[in-house]
Length: 144
Image 1: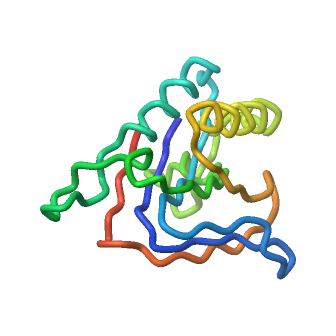
Image 2: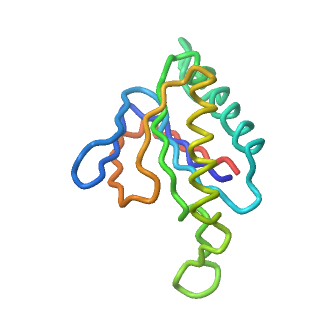
């Protein structure tokens, strides 16, 4: 699993010009699933997201988690995170999981985050999505 995590003031995702998910203060998370990911991988990733201390405390130090600030997550499935452009000019996506597995684990991530008391908004798996955000900081973390 690969996640690109951005601390945001706000973020939204639209499909066919209709907003399907929106959050204020929180994290916008792009998630890519690979072939060997499992429910255990997803559970560990969800725990990591909820404990990641990238929000500022009263001393303006990144010391608080999304749970501490009662933030929300906008979760977007993105197979292109496993794009390999090391050879040629057209990326290869053979490391990305097949849609059936990827969608199953994407849904599992939503469930795990909800179990950890995080409000999650989502895009639509496999859809052409338009994502808007105001990155706060900017703070962007890549988790493999």
